[in-house]
Image (cartoon, one colour):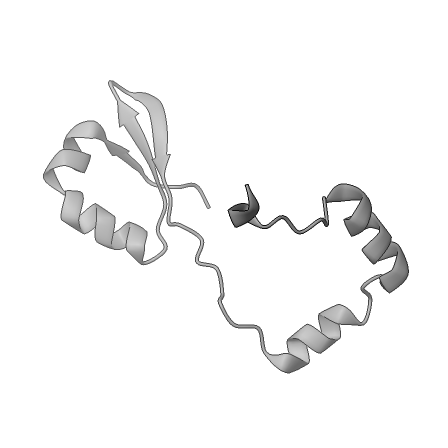
Length: 88
C-alpha cells in the first residue's frame, strides 16, 4: 500500500492531526510544489524486555563461547595493568 501524500501547506495547517496519525503508525510522503521531498514515518519502538522463553529459544542457535579464547582476546586488546592515580 502506498503512503498517502501530504503537501507542505497541509503539513503546516493540519500538523496535530498528521502527527497524531504518525504516532499511531501512519506514514506520509511530504511534497512541495508537486515534488516528493521527504517522508514522515513513525519511530520504531525497541522492546526493553524479552521473555525468558523467547530468549532461550533465540539462544539455542547461538555460537558457543570458549572462555579461555575470550579471556585471551580481552587480555590482548586491553591493558590490564592497574594504575593508582595517586602514586604520581
